[in-house]
Length: 320
Image 1 (cartoon, rainbow, N blue to C red):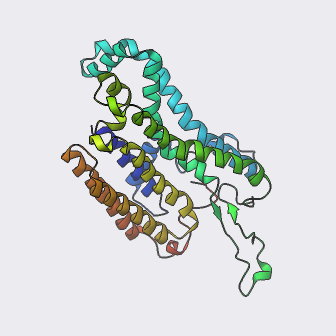
Image 2: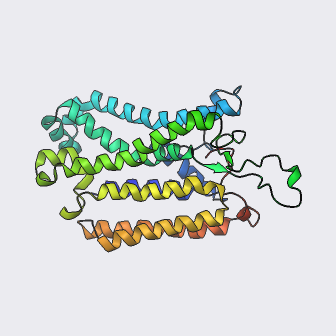
Image 3: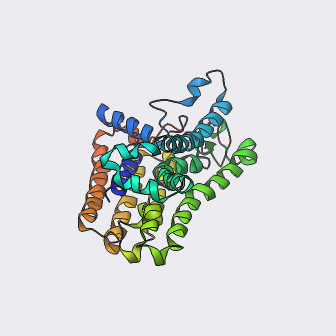
């Protein structure tokens, strides 16, 4: 019952601590560890471009994007392989009786489908970040001012945050990366919540069936019957935060912090108003999670140096 709350809190924590703020070391270590678990990109801890030191900026951006999609997918595959190899050992572990029951009730294909649903739920923010990052552009020179004749990087649409030498919506960015971005946005950002909704919608009349609960219970058992589809809403709330984190990299830190607070407050208001959770304790934990995350963003401004408050919220060249 508490799994979804914990997963969501970890996902949100990773997002809000990506502000370009001089956090204490322990915060950075926690973020790196949790990013590794959830498959989120974290180029401060490790960058895949280190494996290809001789590539230019265009090649490095391609490597970053490929690994951004590959790492979550590989994590899901590894989990499915581990489940397949260990399915015969559940009987020897008393704490996993429910899993043993699932092993007896579902075929291996259905079990792997359940594992894939849970894995995609956890990896959703990372996939969305990579997909939306294709559209994230940063304007360097505005082409205005007293010395506009000296401004060389004045492309009106800005430059791609993964490759600051690549003009946005021009050349290879328009011909190659834009189609990939559109397809991945539809498939991951919008497709996964839609799949979650359709999975429970088609079984809406049999939600109390044990077989259905074993297969899709992760998506709805913690919600009230009339809100059985709330997992899709939860993912859309996560998408809103990822969108702010991704496109907010091109604005000053203070503005991105305000946007994050707006999204966190709005999400909390919607959740508290609808009250979709079945158990009051989980509802309290949801509220406390939102409160802690909002306080984290607010108090992080205390670590914000005066000079950095007028800079973009993350180094655009890093793509992090």
